[in-house]
Length: 143
Image (cartoon, rainbow, N blue to C red; front, side, top):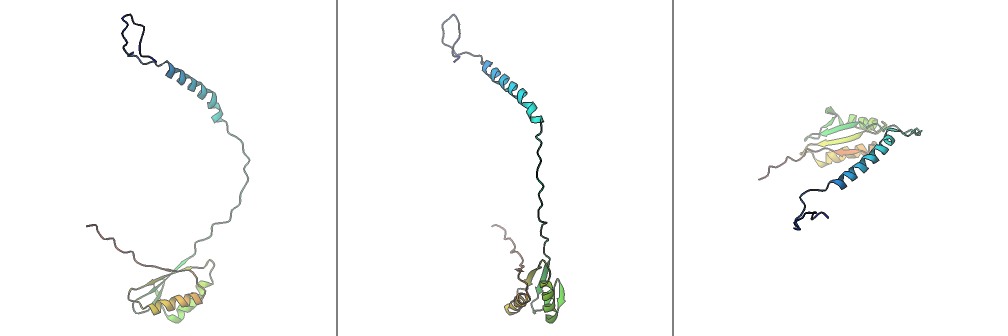
C-alpha cells in the first residue's frame, strides 16, 4: 500500500496524496459496460398475450335500515311502518337478488322482546343478512 515514497531522506512518513488510478479504472469499466448494454434496454420484446374473460364484479346489495324507538315503533328507512306492513316489506325484500342487508338500529330503552321479534320475523321471511348498528363510544381525553 502507499505508506511511503521514494524520497531521499529515508523517513518513513505516510503519503499525503490519494491514489485515484484504481477508482478511475473501475469507473471506465462501468462506463464501457453501460455503453454496451444500454441499447438492449430500448428494444421491446413482442409478446402475444392471451385474452382473459373475467366474471363481472358482483353488484353491492342494497341496505335496509330498520329502526326501533323506545316505545317499540318500527321505522323502515326512517319512514314509520305498521307491524302488519312490516312483514310484507320483509317478504318482498327477501325475494330480491342479491338479497339486501338488514341494518337494525334500536334505541337504548327498547325492550329486548321487540328486537327479538323483529329478528325472528326477518329470519322467518327469508332475510339472512342482519347487522346491528350502534353509536361509537366517545373518546375520553387523556389525563
